[in-house]
Length: 438
Ligand code: LLP
Image 1 (spheres, protein in one colour):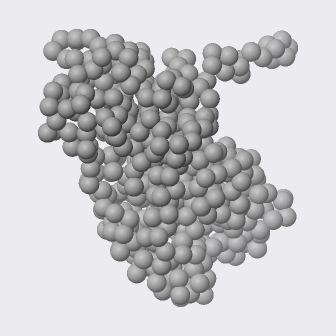
Image 2 (cartoon, rainbow, N blue to C red; image 1 turned 90 degrees about the horizontal axis):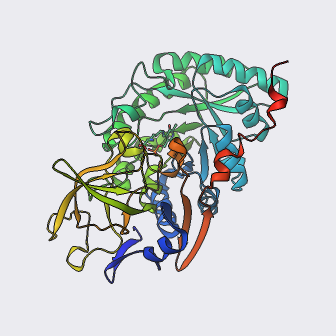
């Protein structure tokens, strides 16, 4: 279920018209549908029900504390990748028992923070990190639980961008699978640590369920080998990477993934093992849009350009990864009200390059995109922006970060106000006399 729908000729989020949101809060603004987010979480959980997983929502995809709290109320935990995200989890009221921490370069402070919070699992990514964690554990008088992030050397499918592929040999993430057993045994012998299992994250997004099957088979081989040596493995974390629909009907369903994953984990579950998932995109992407406004229309050579108020600082994905985001006017002409994202049959479309206001040639949100004829002042909705949208914004060009609005039914809540010029310089207005040398 995706609660951004055209009704009576204009775009609504649940029971709220997006024209009214744009008029009330201005643009660019991220708008989230609470019911879509909750529905996706519940349906993901249902698909994997048979393995009773701990589902730690990946906060890097969407980290607003109001939305994390909503997911927490549904039973979700948090996959954090920094002290900042651990802090967000705490503010959102997420139980440390449902919080995991990953990251290839955690600082000593971040690890100490996680140890003090007694979180469910710290996913370590190197031998050196195990040593550091062990020292911190002794200093703190704690016995943290950890898993080893393994690089299973599994190539993702062809549609996973190289820049978001994580589980292939030579990459920076995790420990090579052939060294993982030795590191496990080393950590198991360390009385200050509680080593529980393994973690993998293969890339994002992954469209082929078979990629998970291959990685899981390698992990289970590792588990069998260690169990034969007398070790007990109680946690297997399969990470995130499950896709979202950016176009229409191109992504496999959660059931398709469950079909290859669940039966492989039956034996592990019978032995009392805990399965963890860290989905981000698949839950959040279609629960949010970026609402923008057309500022200018202009001709550039043979191209029609629509210059809008949202650019790469507000939604980085197109400029960074050439990602496709469906976009459409909030109030299209009557003959161009879409019923799906396949708009090829609609009349009166024109090809636009959709660009933002940033001084960078890569600041394109779309090239040659078929859209209804646009006019300055039109509101344009950029879809599937709920994941890696707001979390990847920046202040480059001293742009202000967008507002975030949460809709549930006919209720609208401002969950993050738009930044102001005062916010832009707030951290710079220090008393510099304190910082002069000498
Ligand atoms: N777990 C770990 C350890 C991760 O590194 C990630 C994402 C996830 C879970 C969640 O993955 P998801 O379920 O959302 O696919 N900025 C890129 C995506 C980078 C993903 C980084 N890691 C984008 O906009 O496509």
